[in-house]
Length: 79
Image (cartoon, rainbow, N blue to C red; front, side):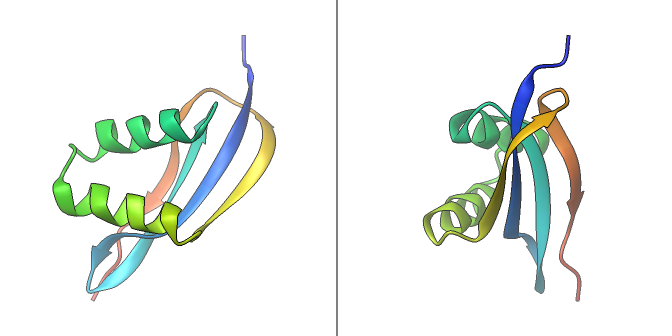
């Protein structure tokens, strides 16, 4: 059964000269961070970018979507 989720659209992450972005469906920000860490291998620089984006409010939030928790889409930055 698909549960209502929040959709986090996170900008200024996955840098490679320019910023990338990531879209994650999760119950809350803690689960969102854990899903990001699991997908991108807990690389220190990626986790720092994630934390900085959240702190600086470089994300959008869609309150309710009907989908499973997980990474919906992502794009690395490019040079």
